[in-house]
Length: 294
Ligand SMILES: [Zn+2]
Image 1 (cartoon, rainbow, N blue to C red):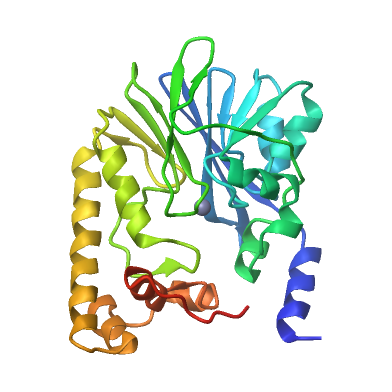
Image 2: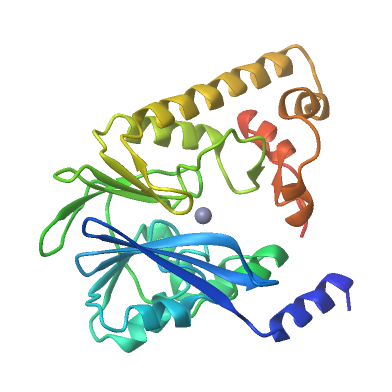
């Protein structure tokens, strides 16, 4: 039995404690969810409730807490921004609990919702922080489809890159944009193996064109009038991509490009056993795959 498997089994038997924070933003309820280690929440993810509709449902470990927090709320629909396990964790619980609850997601996400264990790897660090979601039954939602709630009308915007099945929800009357994991602040030096950096840039450009008053991300803080942040992020990623391509054309090896443009080793590379890496960012710019074993 490998050491990693032993540690994985130990993690599965550890008592699970979680943390839940609730904040309100003029009709939008925000739930920040995390498993705790040593009394502190780690690897926070966010879900939202608007007008009877949940946007994402956190990770599996946090599902009981979220279900409990929603016990007095009307929830008739869930929309998943994508199929990562920290966004679908309470789908199954809520669907079992509430007759007729509708779950909408990108069509490519549906097989993962239906069989989270079978259809998507759960790397060690994600198993530790998120756990395995219960299966749920979703319906496909098309790009540009309109989703009506009692007081709002949301437009679906397909935004691949963070994953192929990623979407955002836009409410034009209020200027709300729910971005899942498409937009994260800061200047990326590493990405995950399944990201497509050029698609991320194209999707960010697409949402940067929308008149947005409030951007509700899948983690991190809510942003008001986020166009400047979105444009800055696009510029940074495009500039970095141009530098990567230029050095590659000059014959530089990937390792040297990584060292020169992405800086030194990162803690996240260690903690995720390389699932997040600077190398993967450079390879994604170059349209290359890496041999990655886990
Ligand atoms: Zn994600």
